[in-house]
Structure formats: structure tokens, C-alpha cells
Length: 429
Ligand code: KE4
Image: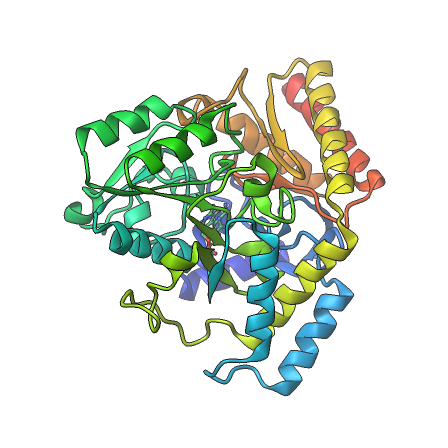
């Protein structure tokens, strides 16, 4: 038995499913999770000492790579000053100012501890601001595990075959409406059917929890216009796209201004930070400046904030975006070539430094088309890539990330491993 297998057996005795987040359990790819011992740059090492080129980046946060020295130093220095005070610190204001400066539509921002806290708070604010209860999300989009979102959700919910979770009261689920991504008419129909009842439309401006699905031309613009016309708020869930597609995220990349934005992952550089922000008139409704309540013992935690500040400042100063995008293009071009050479159907969707290779003929423009993917073939590919030292997300319905620590040699090694893996698949062995 491998060390990871032993550790997994141990974990199963005291942690549900042996993991603290379902998608980590390798449920849809099999073979059991690799317990990771350490990471440095673009590489991680598992409990058996096997090294992998990492394309998961802890599901997005580690855009600078693992154990980036400046981030480690900032975390150590913050820890030596004290872990948490439950009182305001100047570092929180510094991070808030960075976010306001970087994210075009954000005038004020509240720090929280996760993407889920950010999205649930943003929706509460939208409901309070509009005095409406219903929300529109999109099938396959994932906004964290708050009750209102676990209806036809993506990511782990989709992977584990339960896009709508038990435990969500029907009365609450009734206030969540699902539309089809890239189909603005499906949104218009809901607004027409429920005039004056819809508080907001929340979406991932690039859907990255159903694999990666790009917004078609005009889709985001149409949503912006429709929500403004119908008195609803537009919420961009940029937990993945924030600071990833550009310093100002998807809203900078596509030049669209949502009313509220939710952030996470990269914002904490690998430590637990989430945030929601937007128009000052809306954000000032949040307690204690306004009546809408949201709180958190460790919100704005000094150690997590130190990691976030250092990460964002490096992204601003080094601006690795063009280089990461070029590496991602090289990576996905390599994957497409390997698939072509071996007669395997894959459909690649990519943008900036993230993307997905669907094991499907394609194109993949929405949830229904993504579900046509051959998840068994993906599982085989995933395991063959692990054997060849490449760590992909253990689900067809997640994103692959290239970060600032990846090199051309890394990317070419991933493509070579993919070509070998696809050859094995084609040979049927
Ligand atoms: P967290 O609560 O996991 O920090 O963020 C929730 C969330 C919100 N919005 C978007 C667009 C997200 O992608 C996420 C979380 N992403 C998944 C992976 N795609 C987290 C991985 C996991 O659940 O373990």
C-alpha cells in the first residue's frame, strides 16, 4: 500500500470521506487521493515522495506557485506579530485599497474567510438592496456551498452527481432560479415570468466549475443591460477569475462593470481570504454602517492578509499575465496536438492562464454540452498523467491553471506526458 493510501485509510476513520472538501477525494477519477507533503514553485511532492508538475494550484490560489519566498516571509513576519486580534489592523486597509485599485467596479470591499462567505454575503446584500428574494444563477456554475447555491451547482456537487444537495429547504430552493449559460433569453424569460421579484443575477463571468466555458460575444453585455433594465443587481463571482484573467479580473478583461463582485482564492495567496465589494452605496448597507448583517471572527486575519497583500503586489509589479497566457496557449496547443495525433476527441476551452480539455467532440458552450464529456476517459487520462508526474484536477469539470512558476520546459513536459497518455488510451491498453 502507498503512504497516501495508508493516510487516506487513517483519515477515513475521522473525516467524512477522508477529506475536508469533497472534490479532493478523487471520487470521479478513482485511485484514491494523493496526500501532499510539500510544494515548491510549480511542483508538489506527495507522501510517497513522488513529484508532480502541479496544474491545480490548490484550485486556483497559488498563481505564484508554492512556497513563494516573499509570501512565506510575509506570513512568518505576520505570525511573529500575533495571529489574530479581533480588532482592525492597518494591513486590512492596505489589502482593501489594493483590491479597490485593482478591480475596476469595486469602490468598497469587505474581507471574509472564503469564497462561499463572499457569495452568500453578496446575495444577502442584493436581496436587501432590492427588497426582492429570488436569485438567478446558471446551471453548472458553482458559488460555494451556501444553501441558495446548491441547486444545479457545478464543481464537486456536479462531480459527485448531486448538483442539488439534500438539506436545502424547498422553501429556500424555490428562490433560486437556474438559467442556461450563454443564453440570455433563458434569463429574460425568468424576469418576464417574475417581474419585480428577482434581486440579482450571479454568475462566473468565465464558468470554471463545469470545466471552463467562455462567455459568448455579447452575453455579459446583455446580462448587464437586462439586470439594469429590470432593477436587479449583477454579481460577478470572480473567485476564480479575479486577479487571474488580468489584475482586474474578468471585469477588466471584458470591460463590464457589475454591481457587486465576489473574490477569493488568489486574494489570499493560499491562505483563507474571501471578499465582496462593489458600489459604495451598496456596500455601505453592510453593518455597522448599514442594517445588513455579516460578521466573522477571523475576517481580515493578519496572517492571511499578509499573504494576500504580498501576492497581489507581486502580480502588480511583475505582471506575469502575458507570459502565463503564452504558456497556457503552448500547453493547450500541445494537448490538442497529442489528441489529434492519437485520434482522441478533445474540445479545449481556454482563456488567459486557465483552461480545460473536455473529452468530448465539442464545442462546449454550456452545461448540457459539458455533460457530454466522457468522464471515464478523463479518469483514465488523469491516472495516466499522475503516473507521468502531472497533477491535474481530479474531475473533468474543473479548470487547469498555469502559474508564474511554470516554465516552457514544464509545459512541454506536460504535453509530452499527455501525448504518451493519449497514445496508451488509443492503444486500448
Ligand atoms: P470557497 O468557499 O471554496 O473558498 O469558494 C467557493 C467558490 C465560489 N465561487 C467560485 C467561482 C468557486 O470556484 C468557488 C470554489 N471553487 C472550488 C473549485 N472549483 C473549490 C474547490 C473545493 O470545493 O474544494
